[in-house]
Image (tube, rainbow, N blue to C red; front, side, top):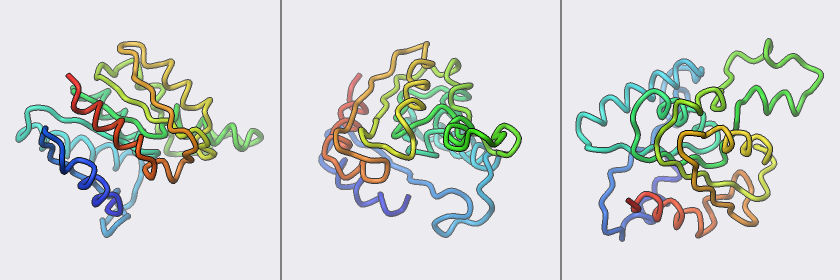
Length: 184
């Protein structure tokens, strides 16, 4: 995620509220060591959260794409004030099964990132950003997740014209995140 650091800095530099932003590379990416298994990523996320709450009064988590699966895990395991999910999905298994219906994905996939299964344990205020033309995470997978967040109805923002990979290039992306994080 290092390539998004300047974008986040620019988006929040003029905010009246100050934020400390931590952008974390997954194991095996961006110079980080290790292998990026689901178990390892989820464990890393909780370790980081547990360290941050020692310093900060409240923690907000933003997860994009695969990171939304990690973010829903944190939100289901720890108290979050705010949760932002960008191009989120119900589960990787569901996406793969829809793409390859003749293969038994429940057997073939080791890492499932089952956000749908965690949704009932999420109580934080949640913003979901949906890319209108997302061809990686189809709308049906995002809609299932939205419908499963039953403890608090999420705020959902559709970014018109955006696809999975360019959603952050639209002004509404950072405007929505900023407004949500600065709201009471």
